[in-house]
Image (cartoon, rainbow, N blue to C red):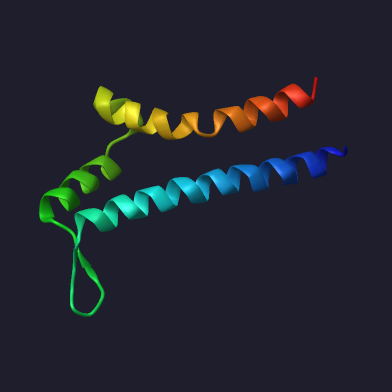
Length: 89
């Protein structure tokens, strides 16, 4: 298999995982909001404040709990990456 095809296959597999991760996050965010009559969501101010702080904070400065949350998400990608690298040997 050509390197370009291998990379394209890996890209699609990782994009599938990313979509699943994003969907999970959106479900979480929607569960924290209050649906308005026009269909929009009102997100509690304390969550907006928390997420704004996290957005502005470099990874190295996050709390251990916040870092672990990011690691948990990355772990979803590792089996696919490991499998792709193993097939190259």
